[in-house]
Amino acid sequence: MKLELRRIHIKDIQFGNETVVKDGILTINQEELVNKLKEDKRIKEVKVDLARPGEKVRIIPVKDVIEPRVKIEGEGNGFPGVTTKMAQVGSGKVNVLYGAAVVTVGDIVGFQEGVIDMWGEGAKWTPFSKTYNIVVDIKPVEGLAPHTHEETVRLAGLKAAEYIGEAGRNIEPDEVLVYEMGSHAEESKKYPDLPRVLYVEMLISQGLLHDGYIYGVNSQLILPTLLHPNEELDGAVISGNCVAACDKITTYQHQNNSVILDLYEQHGKTINFLGVILTPELTTLEGKFRTCDYTAKLCKTLGADGVIISEEGYGNPDSDLLMICKRLEKEGIKTVLITDECSGWDGMSQPLADTTEEAVAVVSTGNVSHVIKLEPADKVIGDINAITTLAGGWEGCLKEDGSLQCELNAVIGSTSEIGYHNCTVKLY
Image 1 (cartoon, helix red, strand yellow):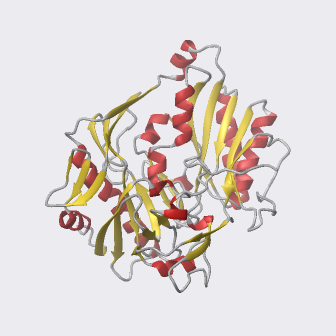
Image 2 (image 1 turned 90 degrees about the horizontal axis):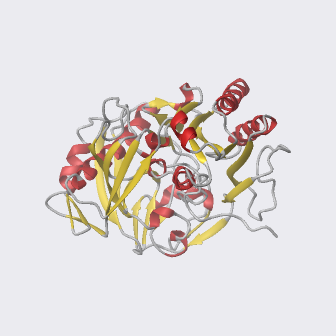
C-alpha cells in the first residue's frame, strides 16, 4: 500500500460566505455547516465557534477531535463503514487541512469529558491548544436513548470534518508525506537482517462511552485484528469513548498515530515494521484471556522479534496490558509498554492496577492524577460547569473567579498513551 498525506498548512481560520482555503486561511460558511449537520433529524441545535492558539479561550466539555481531510485519489473517502460506504482504505492521495481540527462539545448522555485551554498553563498540557479549532456544539433532540444520543454526537463531528475537508480538494499541498509498505514477504525479502517489530494498539472496548470503532465495527465485537498501518492513518479507526480525557485516543490522534509514524520512520533502517494489531480491552476475565491469548498468538505467528504495546485508559485495562506483556516475553518476544500512571496527587501511589515481573521496559506518559491550576478564561465555549462531572474534576474545583483546579485526567490528550504529546515522568 502507498498512501500520500498531502498537507495544506492552515495558518488561520475565519467565518465567511463560503467554505474555502486560500493562502493558508480556512474560511467556513457557518450557516451551511450548521444546515449540513441538522440534516440529521436527531439534532436539535448546532452552534459553531472558532478558537485559535494563544487566545484566552477555554473549550469544555470536549467529546472528540477530528482532522479535516478529503480523499482526492483512491478508495474510501471520509470514514468508511461509518459516514460513507464500506471501502478498503490505506492507499491513494489525501489532502489534509494540517493545523485545523474539528472539536465537538456538548452533553453526552451522562458522563462529561475534556478541557482544552488555548493559552497559558492549560495550553502546555494538550496538543490541541496548537491547532486552529472549529468547535461544534451539538444538542440532540430530547428523549433519545443513550446509545442513540452518543452516536448522534459522534457522527456530527465526523460529518463536520468531512464537510470542512472538502475545502482542500483542489488545493496544492505545502508538504507531501508518503507511507508505503508491501506485504510481509516483500518487506522481509528487502530487510532480511532487521528485527521484525509489531505494534499492538489496545482500544477501550467496554460499552457505552467506552468504545473504539474499526471500519464502523464496535471494537467490543472483534478478536484482535491485524491492520496495515496505512489503514489507521487513512480513517479506518475512530474514537467513541468519552470518559477519561487525558488518555483517550481521539479520532485526530488515530489519523496521526505517533507510534505508527515513529515506527514508519525507522522501517527499513533499524527495524522491519510488520503492522498494527488492534486489541480490544474487555471487562470480563474470559474476554481478557481470549484477547490476550489471541494477541500473543498473532505476534508469534507473524514472527515478531519485538512488540510495542500502547494502552488506552487505565485501571481495568492495566490487566490486559500486563497479560499481553507476560505472554510475549515468555515466548521470547521483547516487549515495550507505553502507559500513563494513576499515582495519586502526591505521585506516591501504585501507578498501575496490575504488575508482572516480565514488564522490564515501560515508557510512562505521565501521572493522570497530577493537579494543575488553570486561570480564568476571557471566553468559554461550551459549559464551564461541566468540570464538576469530568473525570479529574470535582465539586468545588471551579472557583468563583472562573479559574479551575483539576487533575490532568480532565485535559484532552494530556497523558496520551500513544505518545501524542510531550508528557512523561522523572525518576529520582
